[in-house]
Length: 71
Image (tube, rainbow, N blue to C red; front, side, top):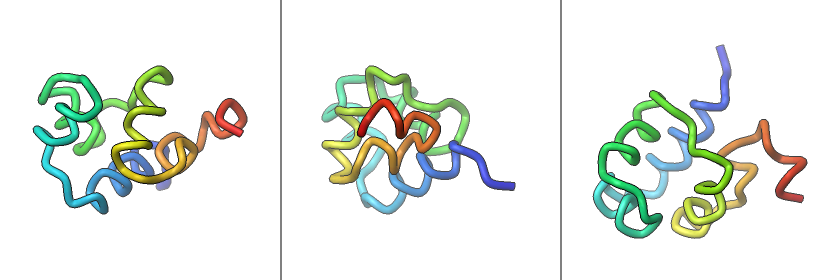
């Protein structure tokens, strides 16, 4: 079954960055980055833009459910 956690997990894993690197670059703690990578939680809307910049992708690649917001 497809869900938005899969989009987030796929984008993070494709980056090749560690949880620590993502956390430092986005400005969140390590456990938050770990939870994103493992599909435990989705990034909050205010975290998506920074995460997209770090991952070199569009915010809608991370959270397709919020694509209308980020057009």
